[in-house]
Length: 234
Image (cartoon, rainbow, N blue to C red; front, side, top):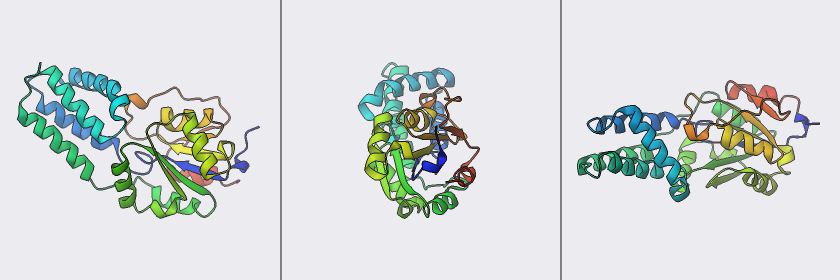
């Protein structure tokens, strides 16, 4: 029977779990729609961009750089290769702004991580561009609270098995906390651990998945402030 008392290791996602991320993608996508308003309506453009992102994940991985390249590809497609150079330049500029954007921690992130670091081994498990994720972690001020950091290309069950074997007592004694049902919760449970969903304000279409509502190792929290209470019996 699943028991919270066995947990010794906590895994945390980074983007949209500890700090804001998707909101900046949404703002950039709105700017992208303005730039191409003469060529495509916003809904059609958004669908074409999402298609490009899905196609390109295997080539570019997750993160801002892949998003920027997908925007350029979409701009070329919807304009039938007539996109002005000024628009390409603007897309590149918006991507660079995203890469330099300061980190905004989400509510309760610092106090939660700081409080639990005293009782559990903490592992940050995040996917995306290596340099960008390292920058965000450094700026967050949370880096020293984690016992280990794993920046991965994708999150599948084997990702969590390896991470929790390497940095903890195995997935059976670990809990993964994150905003993505597809990347943080479901594969962690499939690996043998616990999965805690902390929904974010915005959800990327590619990260959507069915919630394992009947699974004994699945939990949902409104925000990170509930994590200490959930783990109080450990």
